[in-house]
Amino acid sequence: MQDLLTEEHRAWIGKAEPTRTVEISRRDIVKYAVATEQCQKKYLEGDEAPPMFIFNLFSTVREIEALRPDGLPRGSGQGPRLPLRRVMAGGTEIHQYQPIRPGDRLSGTQRITDMYEKQGSTGPLIFTVRTLAITNESGEPVLDEVQTAIAR
Image 1 (tube, rainbow, N blue to C red):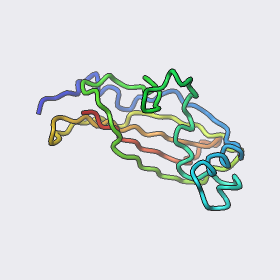
Image 2 (image 1 turned 30 degrees about the vertical axis):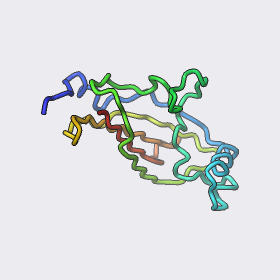
Image 3 (image 1 turned 45 degrees about the vertical axis):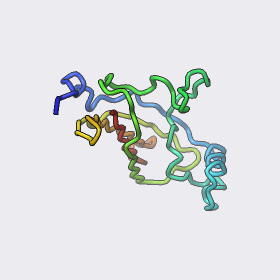
Image 4 (image 1 turned 60 degrees about the vertical axis):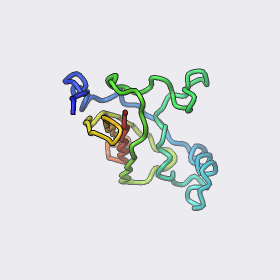
């Protein structure tokens, strides 16, 4: 198999995007719980956020014109330009260490933690693994999200 990843690509492993900080409101938790049809009282009353609440928590709100047809923002991810252009989701893992509650000030830092190639049945694949580490004001871990994207 031909190496598609160069040293320039691999140099991105370990690089972090700027840390972003958000404050969690009870209203945000309630709106998310209602929108995602949560059943547990602690979510519906906003006492605690459901684990998936963190998706796009640190994303910038963009105008509709700045979104691709699939609803994702154009050019929002930091990282190298890959030689394979079609990207699909490869999976998400969430490790939650403590609940997210109203009034929490959370900081999130995302970094590329791995890039590697594999040969698929229809051709080469490039896997990019990004980790979002979320901490509270004391610097204690709250949640880690590991996302894998596959380019083909």
